[in-house]
Image (cartoon, rainbow, N blue to C red):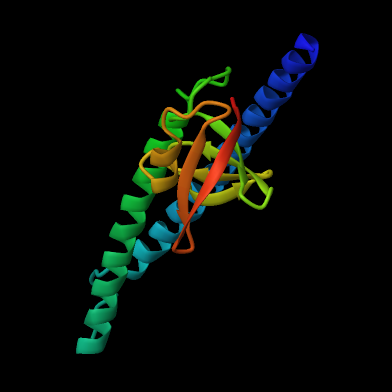
Amino acid sequence: MERSADRAEVTTQRRKARIIDGFVTLLRRRLGALEQGSAAAQAGARVDGSHRPATRGERGAVSEQAALAHGLRVRAAALGTALHRLADVPRGPTDRGGPGALVQLEDEEGARSWWAVLPGGQGDAVDDATIVSPESPVARALRGAEAGDVVRLRRGGVLREHEVLQVG
C-alpha cells in the first residue's frame, strides 16, 4: 500500500511541475504580447516635428495612446515580478495548502478539481488545474489545509464544502 502512496505522490509532483512549466510559458507569452502592445501604443503617442496632432480629437488620441502604453508597461512589470517569483516556487512536495501548493478537491456532488496557488494566478486553466494567486479567496481558504480536511469555497455566490483529497 505504501508503494501506491509513493506512486501517487510522484504523479502529483510531476503534475505540479507540468502545471508550473505551463503557467510560466503562458505568462511569458502574455508578457511578450504586452511588451509589443506597449511599444505600438507608445509609437502612437509620439509627437515630433513631422508628426503633430492638428485637432483636439487627435491630441486626445495621442494622450490615450500614452496612457495605454503606460498601463501596458505596468501590467508587464507585474507579470515580470510574477515570473521572477515563480522561479522560487518549490517544485517538491508540500503537505499543506498555501503558496506553491497543488491541491485536489472534491465537492459535495463528487466532482474533483485541481487548484494551484501560484504568483500571477488569475483563474487561468493550465493542464487540468485552475491557477489562483496566493492572495485570492480560494488560496486563503486552502491555506494550511491538509488531505482529509474540509474547506469552504464561495464560487458563483454559493458557499460549498470541498474535501481536500491531495496536497502536493
